[in-house]
Length: 394
Image 1 (cartoon, rainbow, N blue to C red):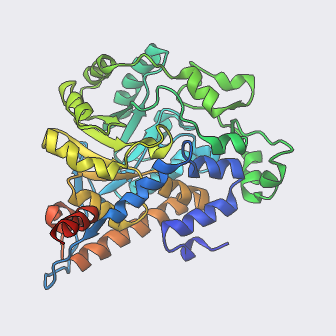
Image 2 (cartoon, rainbow, N blue to C red; image 1 turned 180 degrees about the vertical axis):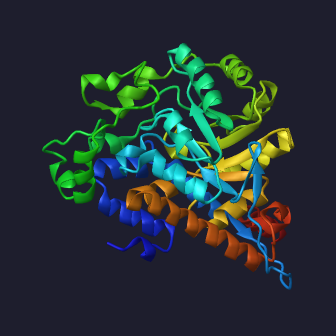
């Protein structure tokens, strides 16, 4: 198994995470819905764009600072909301938020976290966003808003693409449950994940810390995650509910999961200030488009009325650059930092952030660009369109 210092890209961190985690935990991070086409396409779509360099420019200083969600970040990307980090490492959400703070970027906490929003707020002074679902228990939603205001969260993010859980077949095959349950079928996988198993004996609390005081479905024993999600999420949520939540928050309000220009325009109308253009990492609707392909069509319709954040598929610094060049204000990462967390806790997350930061700085210098805010349409070309134009000319 390579050391963290020997992980030279996100793919290396993924390999290390696979070696360290029991199979149910690894495949929960790594898997998508149905045949996982959308999950693969999220990353492969970046290959349809090439970067255009301009040489003989002074690139002695490279500036990665980005202003998004009402705060200035040292990086043009931040950590996406991801549920149940305790599954992957005993540092859980606290390790991830501290790593984000050390790099001057924003941390997003999920409703489905294994650390309370108050404990995360107390752990760092860095910028934070709380990701919220409108659950069947609407009073809990109101409570979240007040708790976030009291704890000093900068932004609120409503995820809208999960009226029910996607068909994540890897979780079914690998017996993924909450809390984790060792069975004869997965005994070898758990038994050979020595460090993870040791820390399980030290901290076996996998409860969903932000909702456990109101809804503790797990007190009845282990249950499939899909069953838990379907028991709590509300299929009746509409744009009227989103408008109500925006009014309750009265601050930077993000809607996560939007992919169509029509929905983006509706988000403007109900008071959103930003969109996380996302298909939930390919874990919900199979055959949903890659987020990077949605940026230009949405920007054409809404102009600069909303900040746009590309969420999904990023594995390289050049992916961030391609998204920003198309009109995104920032990007967010989920699996890359979770691979780091599983690989080495807070230090692993910091390794993931270091790798992406270094790749962005190097690539910008090689492009002749001093700042991420200078990126624009002149810095990329869409390959399929080039091939199409060439065919027409011939």
